[in-house]
Image (cartoon, rainbow over all chains, first blue to last red; front, top):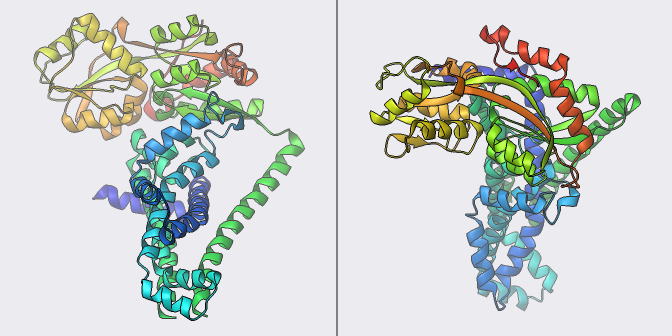
Length: 232
Length: 288
């Protein structure tokens, strides 16, 4: 119990004394997570819509892979990206290993399937009768798509929130491809792992409160947008 | 109106993220401008090292010194010695700072590492529960390990191919014991976490003194039981990865790093490290 209180005190202290390093780490964490989720959304939404609305050979197989990808362990994603980015690997000349870009790559890999799969499901749920009606009213293909997106926006936001939860919680891949390099690729989760292994439980606990608050504010903002659209 | 809400929400999110990127880019540029006035952009070097040098806090002191002096950005990857050496043989790191002489020799002999230099030493100690169920003490580490195995007292091993793990295996080997069974717990984790497991399970554990000293504040169920034997010496070497064998390594900065580690000034910092906080040095000078 004492430790918990110490941790809370330390977290408040870190935030209000403006601890430069903690601030930089938190900032990097947010930046990396938001960029990852943005890329995943931009790629995953169209993919999910196509997968949900059209029927083609191999569609089920693709969907199966997307569903399996939702459970892709981050360390596996991390291992693949590491081998890809090694100096001796296929992308070695880019020297991306142990950079924030490498973390973003791994996080896109683990969050993309979530967005694809959940978007796909929500579009598959659309009532056929409604589609017929929209067509009967003479909507163009583009107009139809817009109406369907509007219909599914709650589910789309849910997919983005789930994807964001995945990337902000992720540690295994970030440790592997980022290397937890001080001042460069140290994000909140990897710092917590390091502080625990150093035996600094109070600092680790303090960082965990900062991580939770960051996650809370962003998820709250996303939820706000999701729910606001419900009543409009 | 309705359909615009989601679009607005998404655009707002994107703008937030983009502005976030924009800001840092500007800050970076500003920071760079400042730096460039005095010197060029730093080069990057990857140092693969053991968890003990990071967890004890030694690198937090040494790396900034080296970076400042040579205008280099060091990317420190703290892993077990086994993995660090493997990174060296693959050419994935530029310099190595490790502590498993027998395994290091193979890497040097194979020509993957050059400029191999002794840097410092401390020692391994056997820690165990204050109750000491196996009744070990003194400086006879082989006898102590045999006693632990015979009494089947809990022993917590790193099990991660690190320098400490290699040392532990060599002692079991010398004692003629094959460690296996319920009493032998292998964590596969770093030294700090392994010590925490040992404290929880009230087990014996072989650890380097530096990590023990920096963590003993959390480990009040454990104490040092066996220390001081010659075969408990823990020697650290630094080396650079051979640029002739691996063409992508940054050999210029790696060479500077090797020289920096054996430099008199650095050696003094190493010898003084920890004296203030723990009342004794964590590492001792031991150059060639």
